[in-house]
Length: 384
Length: 98
Image (cartoon, rainbow over all chains, first blue to last red):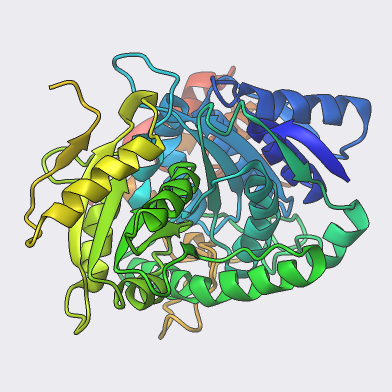
């Protein structure tokens, strides 16, 4: 059934259709409506789940981990400072191999206090061992939550479904909400091999000496390496049932392109409009939207960018003292490749400043004017 | 007393390890009583058999056998809570000697 819903509620419907059994959350703008709607669903019985009110995000993730160990499908959502407060527990979820799925609404880190979007909150959690999906539409948000549970539970690795504050969280779009029976056919109940049960008592996550810890982390990385193929496979299965493919990247008009934007989140859809306009002006432009950031889609990035002359990575984040984070990762993926483009890095839209088609045209003009890619950070739209 | 199997489990490869970090019985070979530097000694002639020491022991290293409290020195860390709580004051903490 088609509904007009905001991005936050797309997360809620995704969690509902996945038949989440335990939801533990603490409210933070702009995430609040995600869990408000879920708590209403739990209260009116439309979702058979336990909603746990907690006193902090750290506790929210702790409760999710506990429920997941007991074999319940668990969901939570947060933003920015809330995610940062969860940081320790993120390691517990991934290190302990508990497939929690969490929505994170990208909100700029304070100070200065901000409720508007950029990606530094979720990218600060890059190395926690969570999978990260960056969404560009409300439809993609809903679909990805369902897929994320499937991938997470197969690999026993938690997932973060990330969306931009306000640009998606509070923006209403038409979303095709699948029928419950169809989703049930795609996503079977969570049934972990090992779980917390009095029938077979174990302590979880206890002291692990140097004779075992290394292997546990090796296994986490090895399972993470299985994720790209599994995301593509489950994405195709989803497409068969629902008509929408959920892949690692979204390449738009890249096949014959000379110049490609590399983007993520909602800016990735704005870039498409800029691509169309540049094409009308005679520039063979394309857009590579990286949807899955962890695991990093090395093969797909190399395949698309191996064919182009110039790539412009537009980051809505900054690793201070280095560069945009996607820029660094894209360059690292291409290093050593025989065929690779000149890669330029741009930072735009921090603290929720709009990234518009004009921003992309400014990026394109700069990239096209250069013969050599240096390490310079080009700031788009900053008042210098 | 509980059965103790002093066997340490070491996996030979990542493959045979469980994905999740679960206890594999380390408490059966980690005899944490070795940490103790004062030990509880119970004067059973004064004992009321109230079970308070058993209830308060955080380890739990006091077992009730035929109604009488018995300290499991393999695991007792010598915290002294039993001696503090004993209403008959029949438990005293004595320095460990090598």
